[in-house]
Amino acid sequence: MLLCVSTGQIFAHSNLQMPFIPTKFQSAVSGGSSGDGYLNPSKIQSGGSVRFALLSEEPLCFYECWGEASDGSVRPFRFPDDPTPADIEQELGPDYTRRMNREDTGPEPVKFAMAVPVFNHETSAIQVLKMSQKSLIKELDNISQIEDYENLLEWDFVMGKTGQGLTTEYTLRAVPRKPASQKGIDKAWAAALDDGFDITRLIGGGNPFKEAA
Image (cartoon, rainbow, N blue to C red; front, top):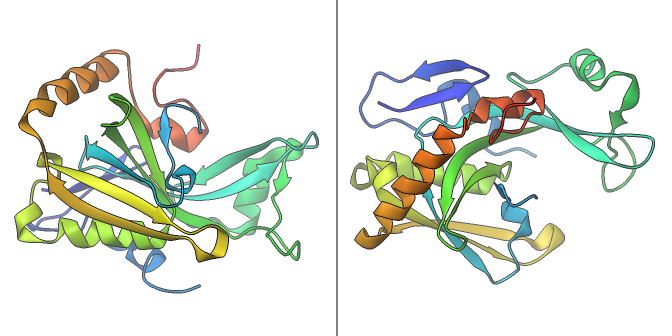
């Protein structure tokens, strides 16, 4: 059964072979207009790729916008559902304003995004893969609905990137896992869980790897 976590809530699907993204979020990805702990597709070099293993069939789904402080620093603000302007204003508070778009004609749009813990084979470390790129989210969702990939946790994935800026294109494909790598994956994931890993902390702007003191 495939589940999706959204700010502590779990959305269950009754069918065996179900989409990776739950029904309530499908419209957000269907057409239309980093620290070391994070795997960000946009940070991949053009022509490069990264191989990773999913560690959960429960992606954290949310909507995200960016706020900017008076000193120029920026931070993401995340919501369990598509927020209204009033929701955003309340969450940003007095210290942040909406970041402007490329054309400087208005605030950046709110984007649907998802995050899931992964094992990065390049670094042999647990990371959080956060994606707002619709092409990648849709491709992962499509793969999840193919019978051969019923258990996504048994496969590796290779994510690639070409181009820059507005010409950027991403690719994602499932590949067989090397049996020798499973022991390292299990050990790293068990250690992260023992240390208190909780991906739902992302919604409040917290660190999924460590609870705030």
